[in-house]
Amino acid sequence: MTTPPRTSLTPILRGLLGRCPACGKGHLFTGYLRQAPTCSHCGEPIGQIRAEDGPPWLTVLILGPLLAPLSYIVSMKSPAPLWISLIALGVFAIGSVLFLLPRIKGGFIGLLWRMQQTA
Ligand SMILES: [Zn+2]
Image (cartoon, rainbow, N blue to C red; front, side, top):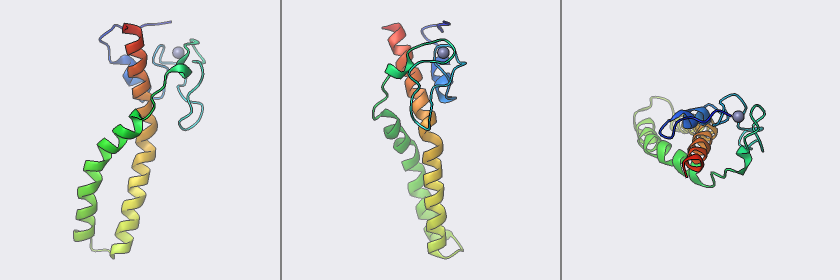
């Protein structure tokens, strides 16, 4: 097992990419958000690390300030009918959440794994 230095961001970056924070080779998830019980490459027990409500919280924290003004701009400035603009905005918002949530969860797991290593 390769353990990165204590101050390294490597475990977080590996988690953001959906990889094992310990080795960077095995997959972190077996489904969209379901964690693998152990790393398929190094055997690290990554399934025991619980991110809980952190990833959804951070996703809302990132996307909220972006989507709120965007929805105002789209509703006021769009040349398309309002219902088309709102549907497009809804699709963009849902797509953004679906894209970001597993990456943020992976980053959280990487951070928690690093904190376990340094504790
Ligand atoms: Zn691994």
